[in-house]
Length: 67
Image (tube, rainbow, N blue to C red; front, side, top):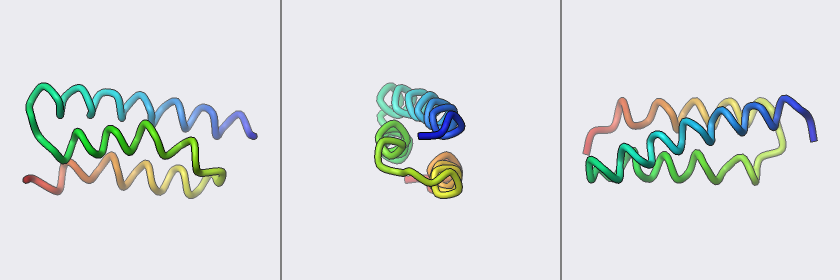
C-alpha cells in the first residue's frame, strides 16, 4: 500500500460523497450512481494509474451524460 493510493482514494471518495449527496437531493440517477461508484472503487483498485483513470472517468461522466 502506497501513501499516494490512500490520498487518491480519499480525493475520489470525497468527490463521490459530493456527487452522491447532490444526486440524492436532486433525484438524478447518474450523479447518484457515479458518487456511489467513486466511494466504493478505491477499495478494489491497487494501481495508481488505474485509480486515477477510473476516477477521472467517473468524475467526468455526470457532466457528459444527462438523463
